[in-house]
Amino acid sequence: MELSPAASRLRWWILIVALILLAPAVRAAAQSGGNTLYLPVVGKSQVQPVTAVLKWAYGGCYSSWCETGWYSSPAVLDIDGDGRDEIIASAYSLWALNGETGALVWRSGGTSHRTWPGVVVADLDRDGTSEIVIAQSGGLVSAYRPDGSLKWQKQPSGGAGEFRGLLAADLDGNNGPLEVIVTRAYGSARNTWVLDSSGNTRAGWPQLPLDSGNANGYAWGVKDPARAIASFEKAIALDPGNPRWYFELDGILEAAGAAVEKRLALLRAHAETVARRDDAMTRMLALLIRNGAEDEALAVLATRRFHNWEGSDEIHGVYVDACLTRGHRLFRAKDYAGARAAYEAALLYPENLEVGRPYRDYRAGEKHYFIGLAREALGDGAAARACFEKAAAHALEGASEARYHQACALRKLGRDEEAGRIFAGLAAHGAKEIAGAGAVDYFAKFGERRSERARIAQAHYLLGLGYRGQGREDEAVKEFRAALELAPDLLGARTQLAP
Ligand SMILES: [Ca+2]
Ligand SMILES: [Ca+2]
Ligand SMILES: [Ca+2]
Image 1 (tube, rainbow, N blue to C red):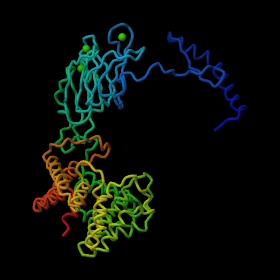
Image 2: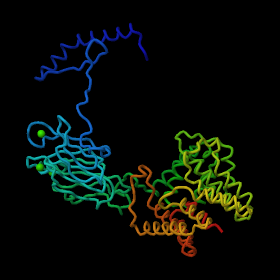
Image 3: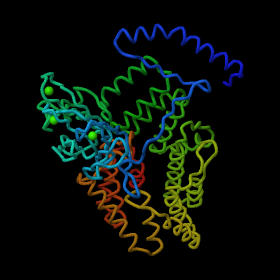
Image 4: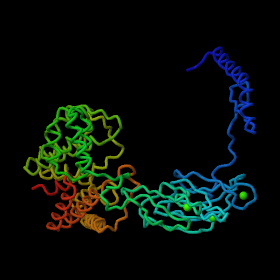
């Protein structure tokens, strides 16, 4: 709100008078403790404003770049005993800076592990000299001396996960050496360690073993589906008209690998309530598609307005799944014109879904490949070829379902060698993940890490796609079945196994 100049002046004078009246009391209170109390006064015109002045910046940067900083706060320590504090900071490497100029005093450690928790300065072993402690990704905990040399470095978690919490304290209250507590971001109840002042993991830690069935506690990414399902079933019994319960419960049933028939039956039994929430309805549509009722899903998708508050494209993904699934069914029934129409509908962005056409559609290749198949079956070879060209042209990397369809399109174009390389890559990637050799990037999907079950299911699916591309049919079918054992709602695997 803008105050008129008169009102603004009046407000200012009230403040001045209040300060004059309060000043003796404040001074008396401050002086009684033997200290002088200074009150900062910030004003618009009468008093010079207190302004932060930048002294230096980019400390610890290289000549042409800086390490990316995360959440780690710096610390101060007089590393050389000259009475002036240095700044100790870490992004990936650890550095000490001259507090006056920002000039680099020393740099230690490498640039492969990022530092999330703040730098801790404490005299861990109580020998009169402070240690500098940092905790990082790669499960690293390191203690440095004030001169930047490494005192010890440990991986209490065996290197898995990223440490995001760090504290030094006399945890056992023995008035002796300090203990170091680290916590990691990882989908496991095993996430807290206590180290002694030399970095050795203290006996009795971590206190929540992975195989305890979470009986001892909970942690980020750790769920106890049986208990959660029981709680939601109770909530539904008490308050069956709340659509939220169905949305939440279905998410837990999905994580628990429940059968899609059972999940759909629950939502169908409360369809009117489910229809009151877009997110619950979205789950029901996904289940309809997986239960052979994609036409029913498409009927809802054609008429219902989805309010996309969060800007998510999830509902459009469900729409594409429904279109493609209908196309596949019609194609199998040799209704190629119907299949083509269904596949082409997948290219649309219906207005009632409130999802805008993205700059880049990652599933466009898949859609064009299927349109090409339908047009080929309809006898229009040239048009089919144009579709396969489009499907093959997408720049894709890594192992994914989209990559498989790209390879299928390449093969249609006679580019067998390129296709073969992709199929082999998919198989190799899937096999490696299944063998547990694949490094999991827990941070790329921060906050939404998929369960281990879903991850392995995806690996079996990709291995199956690789085999199918290579014409190894029996092995492919075996992998798709293995994928569905783990994740019964994995649509791609269901599609691949459709008769
Ligand atoms: Ca100093
Ligand atoms: Ca020390
Ligand atoms: Ca202690």
